[in-house]
Image (cartoon, rainbow, N blue to C red):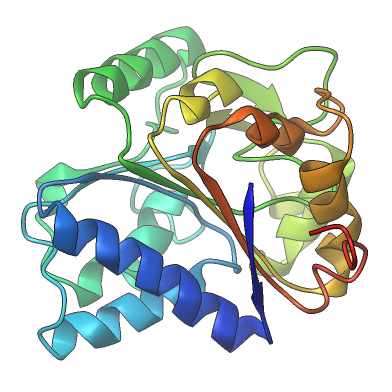
Length: 245
């Protein structure tokens, strides 16, 4: 893993956006794997700013998001489909037909997941996969488990994940209890992985991801085995990693 130290959230966002924009500039028709949550928002807004200045062009880019809540339609304000349009896609010149999110509205979990695996594989997997990390080490919605997951699947969200995501809902009871998510094996097919992390509450997860044993009890630890993984994290998130890199 290559670890890039950022001073704070703004610096982390700028550095991450630099890496993503370089990928788009070098390969204008690249495939991007994208993440939701509060951590990537700063990077998305920086990319919008650079697009508006004419520095980066997304017209040929295609995107595949990691996950979606089960039971939410695309137009639900709490869906990740809605989130991506609001925080990123509406601000750039991407063709919305080339943006993809698992179909949370499909009640047939097996069919929804199989279809998403198919289109991600047909796209050739991401050239760059953006990830955030949960406090329990989850990536996408791949929660700690006894084995690493493979393809897209339906997961039961842990209480810590539900609690963390409740800040985006009116009340905790509104947070869906299940989601469709790319599996860790699918994530590992990406040619480059970019992990972003900020805040003291992510420090233990970042330490375990980078320097702990490779174990499904910390799903992000599998990234140690990827040939091209870059971690961009701020002072607080790297506070337990001092002297280790």
